[in-house]
Image (cartoon, rainbow, N blue to C red; front, side, top):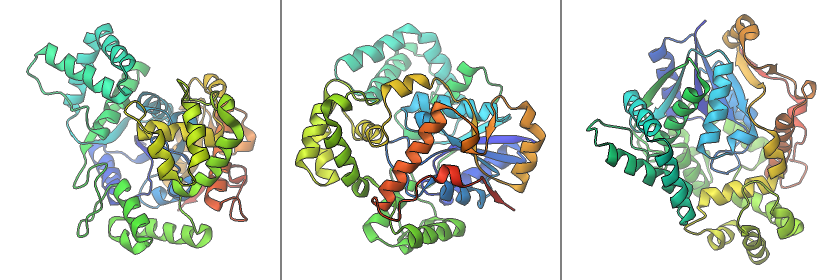
Length: 406
């Protein structure tokens, strides 16, 4: 059986994701699609719209065959670490290829960019470091270093545009695979109709996950997004709404976050991963002054600290993810199985002994600091969704076996 991997968040699973899965299978002639999916907190520092089990079930009902969880330490990291964690897992899962969506859609343009930056070597890295020291954000520093490298090369060949969000992640996947020495083939497909940040447009069948969430929260009704999602996703969201009565978003999580910030105080906040340069003092003052999320964020945000960077800090504060714990987690050490189809189960039975990491199907049966962090993050997510009430379903990671879809 031939497997192709995809790196996903499915927040939530929509028609564009279905297109990606279908194209990934067709273009690589794959028997199995394996998704490495972020858990309950995401790469841009946000709580997931619905929890990881619900999103895994949506994926399995929409032609994904196996879903492994990307551990919290990598799912909430900046792009290079996010990519390193995901590619490590896909490689460990014995994938023959991996497929990502991009604005560019040309794999050779990515390969030329990799070669170009590799040749630039220390000059490229030094340009990034210099820009960061001057107060430029890390993503902007990378873009500036890349532009300079392309300009100085003067090769005349087209390279990928690394100002686009999906191109950036695609480049990081390919760099991680090269560093890892993976034999997986890289494949990219162009995003269609909607860009990463685009609003959902009535009449289109595809919208970005960001646009879908925005439309839902503006209209407060699933009917507002039904045209952009497959039926299994709609069913899953309806069930979630009936059971939980709340969807994941910082405005609803903020009351608990505010309590944590004010309880911990600046000294303890300084031990949290990504907290640097005294920003813990500003976070504390802003939390003391503002009872709602957006005014809090507007006070903290600056040219140096982007919205996404601050949200990652807040995610780590909310979950208690410290520098000390981050230093313990060097690389993914297991494949956490969230669910599979019957075809996926056959694949695991066939290749289980060839996989480079152990498969964990029961959290209680495996001891690891990364897995413990995932379980803690799940409980904190449940508290945020339930507002600390009876709807807060703690211990889910220990109670539920992997999902199996016929």
